Length: 108
Image 1 (cartoon, rainbow, N blue to C red):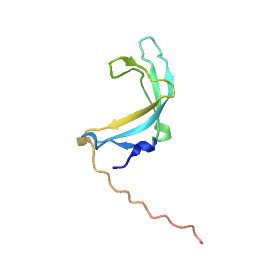
Image 2 (image 1 turned 120 degrees about the horizontal axis):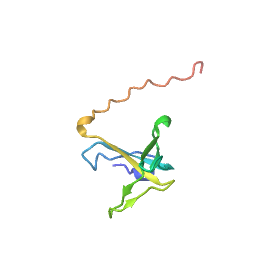
Image 3 (image 1 turned 135 degrees about the vertical axis):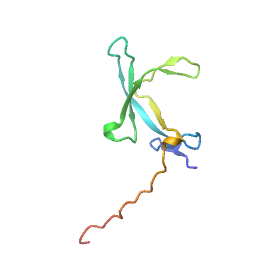
Image 4 (image 1 turned 90 degrees about the horizontal axis):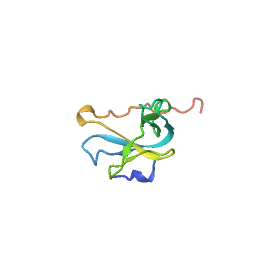
């Protein structure tokens, strides 16, 4: 098994540790968004590394719990991990890539 902890930009394959297929991507809290009204929660905007430019930011409620059950919030610039997982029944085997071989430049 390869060690992906040396390269923080490399997605971690979580399937060995869980029954659900999963991937974990690194991210950075790039913005803390104050609530628009008193009823709205504060949000954290997270830039997910490895996602397409148009879809790389996600916004989540900025309330989490630590191991002791205390409410905590993310700080601006915090390094986080975003895990995406699915039930095994909701996945299919990946088809192999069938890329055309690269052609050399004409006339050389």
